[in-house]
Length: 429
Image (cartoon, rainbow, N blue to C red; front, side):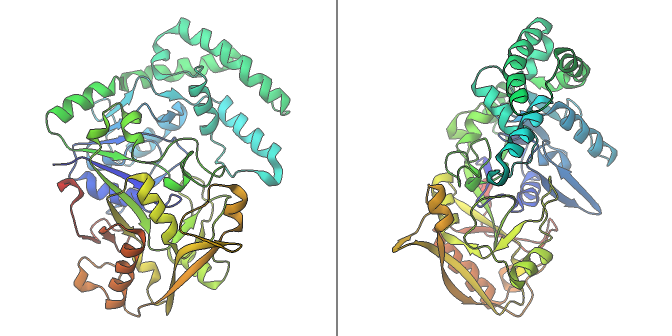
């Protein structure tokens, strides 16, 4: 049996939570390997709706959850999330959740710097969530991050805070923001340490043992390929690598263990925040997609921008993300539209491209090249087999497969977990 890695194939918010929840019933462990609490998954299970940001989705199914070293962790946000889902009836203890001891922490000064820099950018702001993800990753790369393991070493913690404050307070003062004191940060970390440390361990060792024993591992990505810090629409990206290759480094396991890479894509396209969006619709159709799809960010609550399916973008995500098969979600949102459009590439001046340009100015200038396809008048909502789908809906899915050069291995037709058409089980490889 293969392990499975789930990543977003657009700009995030593709419905990864439902797909991961569906796959988690077949897995033994679910691993988060990058990102922070700037991403969110909404899971609908019976009459309960769970909104997760840091906790691996498998916890909802009673599976072991692991937060890998590639994740940046806000202790207050994590503990608050644990308290919230515990009140909903989930069991989150060191027996069900493990955290990499070498994962970096987000401290209160990180979101303060994040917000101050966004304010200073003015009209040129990136559109971050302001939760300190970027500054925390910067500290990690600069080798001054506070890590989970440091909570068990008071002397290490004290010395690291001195270095951290020297850097951050200089920046905060320069941006006109309030500096932080060592006593404030130390007290906060000392208060969370007793609750956080029992979850901590060298998770790489546990994963190596589980792999040796033939256990099924599900790697759960956050954000999506087009928000990857290297391969996305830079600079309007997140602060980590979101492609499947990151699962190895972000969990502490060899690349051969990643297994089948499943990319999640909506049957149309959405984006939260600033940045280029060639197929964005500013008309009644775009508004309709947003209303039908309930397009609001899980974490931010911001309305998502909506547009036609961008096959050129998803094709690129397939190539750089290592995607072997697609899970296509929210097909039902397109029910009843007389005509649909698929973006096959972009025109920039006299040049036609089949890929997203790397340059910021080129991205802004890209004009989508469309192929029109007839819509369907029947309903796809709740379909659980190909036989339940209108013929034109099947034709739409097949055309997407041709354009993105990847098979649709799973089709989601509503937020409900079981409203899913399985073409190929990713765990079968």
